Length: 76
Image (cartoon, rainbow, N blue to C red; front, side):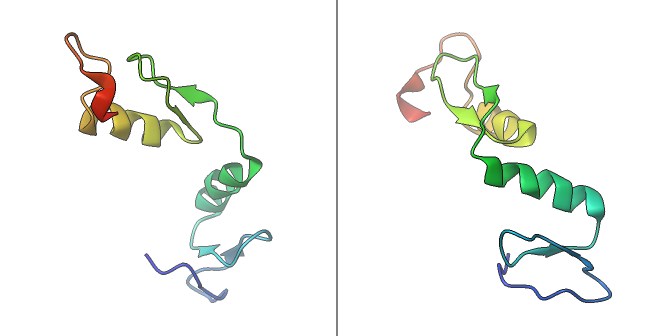
């Protein structure tokens, strides 16, 4: 995904902290949360990784198979 969009009719919602723009206000709000540095979503699979967004945590758990019985967390 390109990281340098300028505001346009198709992407009118611009982040004031970086160069990204979004077509939906909800996406801008979700993106802004990544700038806070807060990572409130922690993997309960034993690896201890934390994430800024819930969907990133879920993706981690699926891709790394983290949180299922018999896990080897060395890959997490």
